[in-house]
Amino acid sequence: MISLAGRDILHAWGKFVFTGMGLGLLIGITLSMAGIYRGMVDDAKVLLDNSGADLWVVQKDTLGPYAEPSSIYDDIWRGIRGIPGVDQAANITYLTMQVSKKGGDVRVLVAGMTPGGPGIPGWPPYLVAGRQITRSHYEAVADITSGLKLGECIKLRRNHYTIVGLTRRMVSSNGDPMIFIPLKDAQEEQFLKDNDAIWAQRRRTAENPAFNRPGVPGLLGAIIASQSTNPYVNAILVRVKKGYDPEQVAESIRRWKRLTVYTRSQMEEIVVGKLIATAAKQIFMFLVILSLVSSAIVAFIIYTLTLGKIREIAVLKLIGTKNRTIVGLIMQQSIALGVIGFVVGKIAATLLMAPIFPKYVLLEPLDSVIGFIAVVVICILSSIVAIHAALKVDPAEAIGG
Amino acid sequence: MGDKGIQIMGLRKRYGSGNTAVEALKKVDMHVAPGEVVGLIGPSGSGKTTLLKCLGAVIEPTAGKMILGDDVIYDDGWKVKDLRVLRRDRIGFVFQAPYLIPFLDVTDNVALLPMLAGVPNAEARKRARELFKALDVEHRAKVMPSQLSGGEQQRVAIARGLVNRPPVILADEPTAPLDSERAVAVIRILNDVAKKFETAIIVVTHDGIIIPAFRRIYHIRDGVTYEEAGEGREFA
Ligand SMILES: Nc1ncnc2c1ncn2[C@@H]1O[C@H](COP(=O)(O)OP(=O)(O)OP(=O)(O)O)[C@@H](O)[C@H]1O
Ligand SMILES: [Mg+2]
Image 1 (cartoon, each protein chain N blue to C red):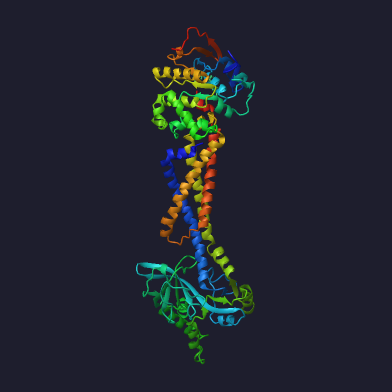
Image 2 (cartoon, chains in turn purple, blue):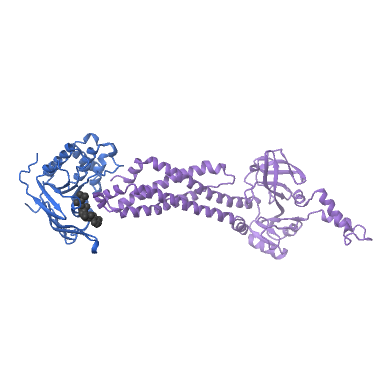
C-alpha cells in the first residue's frame, strides 16, 4: 500500500511548506514564550543561587528583600553569627536604579556586599574579566549584560565608581544586570541626599525646639549626626554549617532574634510564586491564545484541503477504501503540517527570537518535547472537523447525476 | 442464459417519504450475462443513475432482488455484510468524468485498487501496466492525471474499473467527454474486456453515436425498464 497522505503532500508541497512556515512562526513565538517564562524562573533561581546563602534573614513579617522592602539594623548579623549552625552571616543591600553609561542608560540592581572577599555570601562567585573588589570604596563589579566595560566610570547617586571586574549570569529576578559595590557605599547610596536636602533637614531640626534645647549643648549635634548615618541593611545572608539542617537553624534565628527567616525553598517559593507570578500568568495566557490560534489555523487549513478533495474522497470510498485509510490520510497531513511547523518554529525560536529578545530566553529540551507533543495533539484534534466532513461524504457522489 | 452475470428482478427505489417521495425506480428487470455489454438508455430523470447506484451498492433499493454472479446481494434488504468489500472486489465503476486521484500518477491511480485489497505494490502495478497495453495508454503510465488528455483520462479510468477483474462493470455515460471516434473506441474496448474477462457490463448512455455498438439495449422510462429486441445488433 502506498501512503496517500505522503503522495498528496508531495503533490501540493508548496502549499504545505508555506502553510507550515506560517504555522512555524506561530509555534516559534509559542516556544519563545515558554522560553521567556523559563528564563524568568531561571533568573530568579540564579539570583538566589549566586547569593551563596542558605537562609535569608529579613524584617519581621515581610517577604523581603526581593519581593517586598525589608530593613533591619546592620549590627544584627553579629548576634546571628553566634547561633549554632551558622557558618557565615553577611549584610546585604539591594537597590534598583537606572545607571547612565555611554550610549544610553541601563536598569541595574545594585547590591551592597559585606567586605571580606569572595566566599562571603552576596559576593559574585566568579568573574569573567578583571578582579574582585579590593578597596572598601568606589569600586564595582558589574554583570557583563549591563554593557559596562572594565575601567569604565559610572555614577551612582552622588559617587563615582570604577568597574574593576565583570561577572556573568548575575541578574535580578527581573533579569536586570547586577552591580556589586561595597556595603558602606551602598548604604550611603540608599540614604544619602543631595546637599540642599541635607541643609534643609539640618535647618528643620535646628528649628525644632525639642531638638535644639537651650542649655543642652551637644544635643543638636548628636541628632544631626544620627540623621546622617544609615544603620540599616535589607537582609542578612546566612550560610549554614555542613551537617546542620537549615530549617532548624532558621527556627532558632526566628526564636532568638524575632526576625523573619526564609530557607532556600521558601525564598524560591516567594520569588517564583509571588514576584514573577503575574508575569508568568500573562505568559501562560499568551501560550493558551497562541495554541488556540495555531489550532484554528491548522483546523482551517486541513478543512480547506479536505474540502478540495471531497470528490477524490468520494471516489476512494466508492472503490472500497476503508474509512480508516481516509481518516489516516487527513490526520497524517495534519500531523505533517504540525511537524513542518514545529521544525520551522524551533529553528525560528533558537536562531531568531532567543538571541534578539531583550530578556533571557531559556529553551529547555523538555519544553520542546512537550511542545512537540502538544503540536501533534493539537493537529490531531484540529483534523477532527475535516475528518468529520470526509466521513460524511457519500460514495454515491462519485457516480454523479 | 445462465445464472451468472447480473440479474435484477422487480427492483424499486423510492427517494424520501410522504408527499415529497420520488418513485425513481418502479419496476426494473434486467439481465446481463458474463461477457456481455448492454446499453441502458433513457431520458433525463428516468432513473438510470439511481439504478447504477443501487447496483453499485452505494444506495439501498426499496424492494426487489439483485443477483451478482452466484450471490444474491439484495432481496428486500442487503444480503452481503460488507458493501465496501463488495464494491472493492466485485464491481468496477467508470464515471462520466474520469475522477482520477490528482496526487497519484497514472499507474498508481489504477494500482491503488488492488493495493487496497492487499495486493503487494509491485504486483498491483504490474496488473495496471498490463491493462494500459490493452487500453493504449502504456506510454503515459508515469505521468500525473493532469497531464493527460480527456480521452486518455477516460481510458485510465476504465483501466481502474477493470483492474480488480470485477465480474461487473457499471459505466455512467463513459463516453460523454469523448469525440465520436473515441467514444466508439471506448465501447469497443469494453466489448473486448467483457469477452476477455467474462465481465458483465452495463453502460448508461445518451450518446446516439454509440447506441448501434450495443448488442442488447434496455430502455428505461419513469423508472420502468423495457428490453429492446436485439435484432441485427451486431458489434461493428
Ligand atoms: N437523492 C435524491 N433524492 C431525491 N430524489 C432523487 C435523488 N436522486 C435522484 N432523484 C430523483 O430520481 C429520479 C431519477 O433520477 P436519476 O438521477 O436516476 O436520473 P437519470 O436517469 O440519471 O437522469 P440524467 O440522465 O439527467 O442523469 C429523478 O426524478 C430525480 O429527481
Ligand atoms: Mg444520471
